[in-house]
Length: 95
Length: 333
Image (cartoon, rainbow over all chains, first blue to last red; front, top):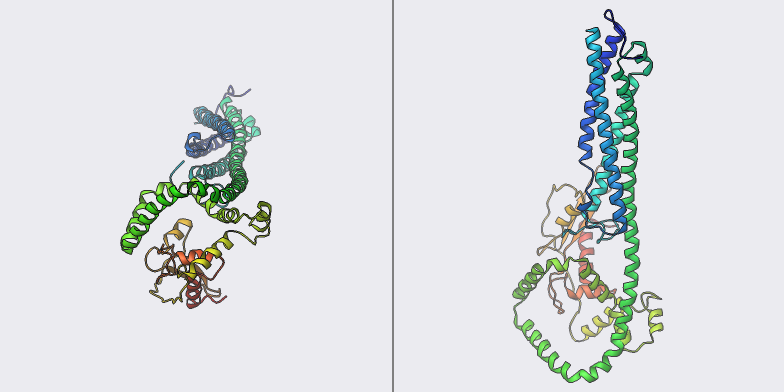
């Protein structure tokens, strides 16, 4: 079971893990920012004068891609929050 | 559709709009960005292993973070693949539309040929009935136009034509108008074949779609031949003079850059030379458009005489001038 152990003193492995979690949080922030910029590249369907079935299916695929990017953004945000929380928890335990 | 002229590599001018090409580029860039994100996530994920988390009795949130990173890697991979698929799909769609356009163009060409042939075939019959009206109207309109053309000074004529082209530039760059002109010109031989009552199958056999003996070129040759016998459309000797030599302009970077270098004034030929040590010189030749619309050859090789002579397969003054200029510039291959 995780998260219920009692640390009685400074633990070098836990300190190292906390450092790694902080590095991870910083890197996740960078990836998240990069993803936010990349999402702006997603074309809008209405920008073209293209019409017809091919355009219709293109629109569906664009919507699917937009949903995938939104899901990715949420997963990365979640990973960042959990990483920061884990680093804080470890910090309160090992100082 | 935007008013901008789109130049694309063999695709359709009606579908390959600037916006569509831009979307394809954006999707490719998005796929590359997602691939980069995926690489960083892979690197992040490998740094903290599950074994390490178990060893130090890590908080539950750290396990949740690892799980979210794993899921994010899956989503990033999927999104990257979708973006690449869509970019490739746009390219394939543009090519398919190009093929469809080419097919539609062939059908339109055939229809235009048939119509032109029938028009030529039936025109004398229709003309017999309508001759009085045609004569009266033709004399009034044609005569008025001819008198107006003759009495208007050349500079004024150019000004009027220039203003008309400026006022109608929207129509002139409309793909439908371009198609109409292309079909009208390429069907002129079919009209002539109908006019001389050449049997249609024989016309097709001898025409552009068959043996290529009769076609736009032969029609133009007949026009030039007949016109030159009365002093029109007759090529005259040409001479080429180097007006200016400049150094320094960098090589062009694309269609737009090259379009800006096409001569628009009195100088009609521009030749750029690029030299690199150890390499043969490279040249780019830019030619201006027609500057004299008269059917009487004057002092300008870029005139209607050259246009029709070139279509007829003869030695146009503009072509001869270009060859001379290229030799003077050192292009000898």
